[in-house]
Image (cartoon, rainbow, N blue to C red; front, side):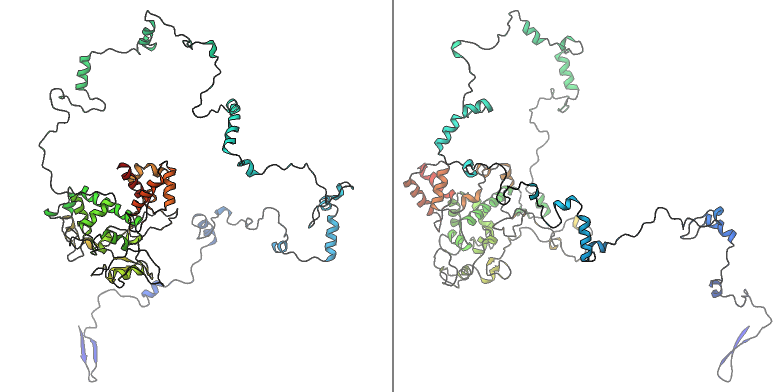
Length: 587
């Protein structure tokens, strides 16, 4: 039993009460510690040479060559053995590229050694070949010429395009036409081939060719009905009863037909539909996906929305080709000068541009463009939904007119003058300064800000699939960021000159319908924009004269006057001139 006592010095002392009892456990010898067990024995015992040669055969060391134990004591001859002929050191590359300079004596010796060669005598290095020793002494080397002098003929331009009149060219072509017939068998278009028949030997009832043998006993018909292959048994046609053939057609499947064994017994029309016809739903898949209220179902309005989009695209193209600025186009639409466009103004402009819209279609177009739902189209709505506003930036003068800072359309002398229709300013500004955004960073030109049409569906709706892996309090799917680049880059303005390598679709390319059904004028390289661009009176006259339209001078002046009245600035294009000409001819 062990005891712990405290002495007078206030220290603790350990005493063993039973020293005669043997302690339990294993006695660890003094000196054997973990350090002694882990310490490497040094020096290592050496493997005898006799054993080492056998180990090199079976287990060679890392990086050592395996040597058979029978050759362990053989001398190493392979490491000192050399094959081939020892190469002698040659001249270095530096001496070849940059040789040391030679003395005059060495140069003279080199010339004497090279003088014995015939090539050095005929054409020495650094000098031209002197051929005068081989020529006669009486020949003047400086002025003598060789060969035959070519006679000077007519120039190439005269040969390709001779100065002849059209009558002379036609006469020469007619003179050589018979030669071309004999050599190239070349006839004029519509020319009868002359086969050199002697018509004097034949009458009007004469016949040509070999007579066909004819027999009245029907032997030719018999040959046509009985072919040669039909005489063979395996190639002969087999006659089958019509009743058997009909039975086989009813009971056996036929290629390309549905097997219907009761088609004859069930007497129904060909287009008969079995079952009860269900009443079609008022909503579509899109209405279910977007949780559209019943009063706002979109099913059945696809065609109307497509027609509205087509009308908008047509008005965009017409405005872009007929007007130079957005303000000029807006004033043309605003017939009453109210600063807004009502339904009557829009209908008048559509009729002027050959768009006779029905009442419901006009209401849909007004509803689409009218964002604030006041029944009128203001300048911002007109610029966003009926124009390509990015392609028609607003100048500084127009900005002052739109914001009512300048009450007249005439710019100061130090500014760029623009042709704008003069009209008294409205009581309110057409646009506010904050409604105009810079077209580019640091540019003086501005463009109207983009308007977004209000959503007709709910912003937040829950479906059964959205509950899977849903996060409580997370962002809705409508707030997720969209990635990728749109196929039609309507957000970019199309360049005036498009490069060949630019494959971007800016929204002004032809549609799939134009590719499948191209117009006749597009096959000739004439497109829609060529019909709507303004032209001068001389260009219009040349175009209609070249296409073969005969117009008198009085009629042309009358058509030109009426066509110029249809545009605010008096511009006339091919399409407007053609429409006015048709109206005059119809009357």
